[in-house]
Image (cartoon, rainbow, N blue to C red; front, side, top):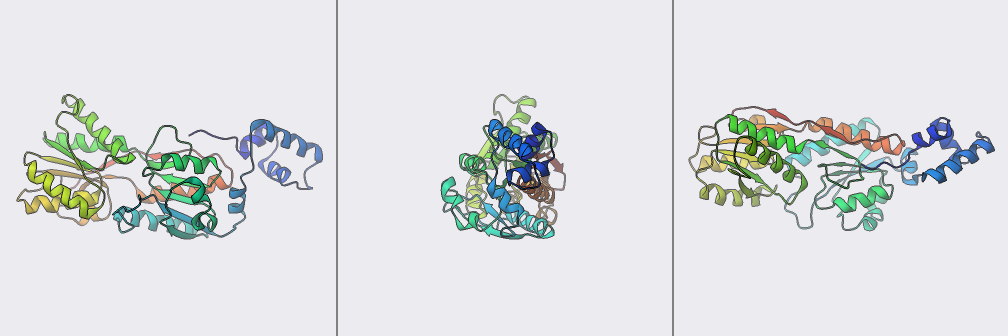
Length: 335
């Protein structure tokens, strides 16, 4: 992530404390005219600009943080998605502990300007985006405009916004390697490759196959399956009916994996005896499905804490780095 000169950096340049910089830029009488002028000159030379949006946040303008799901127009995926519900609940709990209320928004990211002028943005002190969708450029523009924000998503090139997430490429790799270790040699991949996180999981999946000696994508059998349970189920039914040789499935969410297990059972195929299945997210549903689902853990409570901490670091003009967790495979009965 490209870093702007922040208040801490300006304080180091001036050889004073952050509080002195803050007072000087606010034209406080507590700072001498000479020191004030030095700080103002250094700010101009270094390209530092007062983030008025962040300052409003620090002053507690509304006491509200917006949580935005970056869904596409007419997307069948909704807040009913178990991953969204779990993440939103964890974020709301973190914000409550900090004395803030949560505003859940479906505001569309059509352009950065329209979002900055929206009721969601104007009525809140900062924004947490869950997912990037196809809005990478718009998120970059919002960060460049000085909006206090944090994004849950995947590492993408050319990014300037602060990111919290997990190692999706490693997650796909670990899941596929586990299926290979179970003796699977025709492994299907189920996920929507139009989105950044499934793309990286697919890259890890292909890497594991190559290491196992399969040329190119080799034994990779890709099914374009969305995160929406209804449309995913229709696509999976056709896919599984036409690919009876599949003996392993890597699914890009636990919801997709649970639907796949149900369909396999309807088709008379046993899990894991005939087909081993691995999901992604390690939601509480994974433990209670039958058979219990092997899954890649994303540690949602950790993610919620990091998103809130990242947001509050920005508004306090502290250094804000990306926060990425390593992927972890949780083995259960399905694979």
